[in-house]
Length: 173
Ligand code: NI
Image (cartoon, rainbow, N blue to C red; front, top):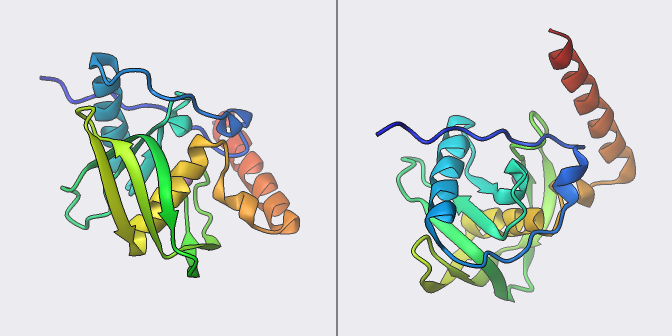
């Protein structure tokens, strides 16, 4: 069997990153193939989470693997936050769609999320630490929100110009 084909990751400030995703209608063969390709794409890019929005598929689907051994894949389909801790903490975040940029974002330290898994079964996930942060970051993507939107307009504009310039340089070679 061939390894799953990699997908192209949209890069900020691509306007398609601001698309609001629609619910997944059925966890069928098409979705299972998309999941496999998203995991392959995420691992290739050394990421810990990837939302379908980032590969230009605007459906509510997230893949995550926060383990150091990269063997604890997690699929969240149509995720909904049931509870988020009032306690928040500011932590450094990065994003495969915002290469090379890391900055502090305040997030709830724990969340409880209901979602379908890769087999279409309903699950409740109670997460804290890095997993909680990752879930919140990826769920933002499904709403068309990129983490740099939490930063000041000044910082955000600097990041925008830097990435636009970098992408122009890539296009030139
Ligand atoms: Ni991201």
